[in-house]
Image 1 (cartoon, rainbow, N blue to C red):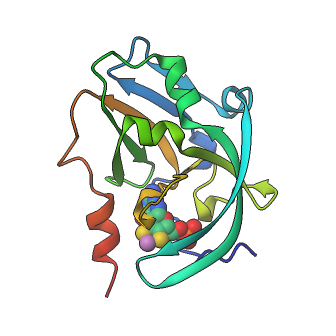
Image 2: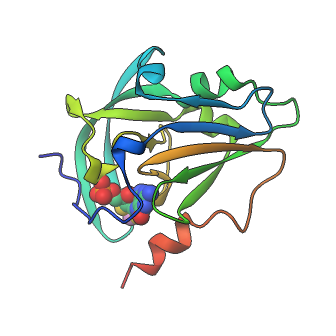
Length: 165
Ligand SMILES: Nc1nc2c(c(=O)[nH]1)N[C@H]1C(S)=C(S)[C@@H](COP(=O)(O)O)O[C@H]1N2
Ligand SMILES: [Mo]
């Protein structure tokens, strides 16, 4: 039991079809599959997770790869400043300053087991600093590097807040 709330898995989420694309302002656009990610250095850290809807899951143990290691393989341009993290559930996407994103972990495991699909498996973004719950993007499928802040495409906060009654 992770302590996280269990939400329905939306249409469009298909773990078997999953891969991770790194696109946009990079020297080489790349696609990673699970094996490619597992070849990167792995880290584990423990954190509480708090949702704006008013629940907390304590002491979650996440294991995965640093997003910075993924991004470095694609070599962001000198002018790259942000990235948009896209999920497999339709329009859901969240933007980050590139430096903050580099420190985040792309979690592949939770509490010692493969990350279950209902909690964002195969890969969920877990920011390592202060973060809002909607920034922990489940089913991460694409990182689009940009040279300015993506505004309209950053939908995660409004989707999450629209669920708060
Ligand atoms: N792709 C995607 N990621 C998402 C969301 C979502 O709707 N889609 N909801 C966010 C919000 S608001 C919360 S609180 C957590 C919920 O995580 P859980 O379903 O594992 O409890 O996922 C976050 N990541
Ligand atoms: Mo949330």
